[in-house]
Length: 175
Image (tube, rainbow, N blue to C red; front, top):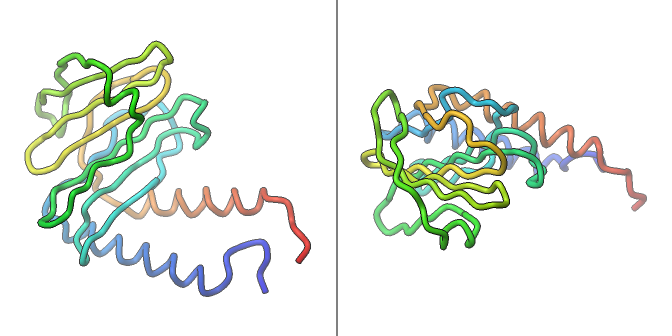
């Protein structure tokens, strides 16, 4: 039994999930967005949702996964029939008043709402066409412009590396 990593069955499920995501991404009629000029690295797949083979949402994380450190999460989602999807966002940001700003999405000026808290947390919401975009983070906002993600494989590979390094860093436990 492999005690330092996922059992074979878990690895097979994970591989199938990534393959399904790659297929859904390739045939998605709508773009999923990434930061045009990220100032934090690495860029990693954080979360995704598919419904009957259709990509509904994709979240990319920039920076460390330690939420006390500066980081950014970018979620793009589309409305699918019969599905009520809303990405996770801190309630204090959702309840705070926002300011109307203009951001760049795929080279187009797009209206957005930006909320900033004294704690350095912030949230941005835009609705460019048939998809919705929510970016949130801690620390400076940096350049809030976005472009379509052209290739999903690098962010999947980054997630694999992150999960592998996290598992390798865990102490070994006796059975």
